[in-house]
Length: 372
Image 1 (cartoon, rainbow, N blue to C red):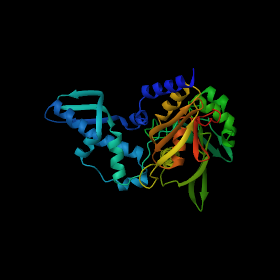
Image 2 (cartoon, rainbow, N blue to C red; image 1 turned 90 degrees about the vertical axis):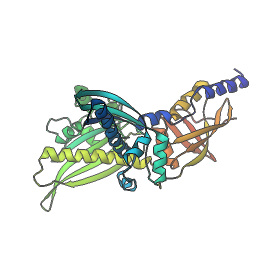
Image 3 (cartoon, rainbow, N blue to C red; image 1 turned 120 degrees about the vertical axis):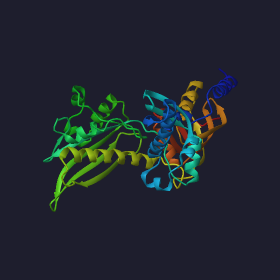
Image 4 (cartoon, rainbow, N blue to C red; image 1 turned 30 degrees about the vertical axis):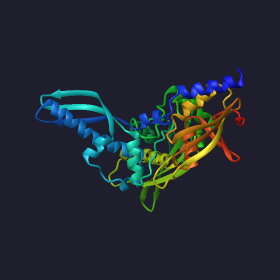
């Protein structure tokens, strides 16, 4: 294929793929499923309508909890029912049953991304909408200096397994302790942060990396404490360490205290991820950067473009030049550059500085040649 044919093929690929870069990611992040409703009224039809309206407010609260960090929620006053209804794009009845004038159902709602973003920006509320790849939480219990992982008496592990599914931007997995799990990673390896073993176990659970959560019981001046050290490794974000110390409350059983701590820790992991991918508010106004994209043929460009379509921080891409070495593009984005890089990494894209411009490639590819 000559250069003219290559350029023509590229133009056809540009025309054949959708320009709404963040639409697929938004479709998922701005959808709230499994909202349970129960309403009685004069008729079954009226009860259904009122129940669906009730569910909109519940779904909006869950969406705010998903997108907005705890510290920012106070800047977002409660919305009246009619204002919430204006933000809803559609709803779907997932299940329903009625008894006379009572309607009980489960409803899924999808909110309009641009209207939600506009509302949050108008209130100067920072928010996140980049969903991370799933991460594996490995709960290690330290007793008398000895790490425990798969034992039945590991209440810390049982507490994490008991949390059930999550609805946030940082999906998590907890190993079940199958024979394969036990053969892949033992307690000593987990406690030592053995990257190779952790990576193998993460692959079993289709997770991008692992968070080791080491819990131990301590006593300070007569007060019983639970000390939990967290270590995130192997994720498509920087490694991180942090610690939480929580006193055991009066009359708490071991089961209840570990369950409470697991709930708090799960929220903490979610909040840490939001902090890394915040946009809007004081998180950075965004901007435009110029980048070269390696594309030896049309398939390379289509592959990059498809991944960019799942990066919520990307608002627009303008192609400035194209040739056999690739493309030169301007990328309009929300938030800070580091936020954009972190969000792209979740879609296996690397963004690296290259002089006055940037280089964008699928992770693992060789450095791209400059477009010509």
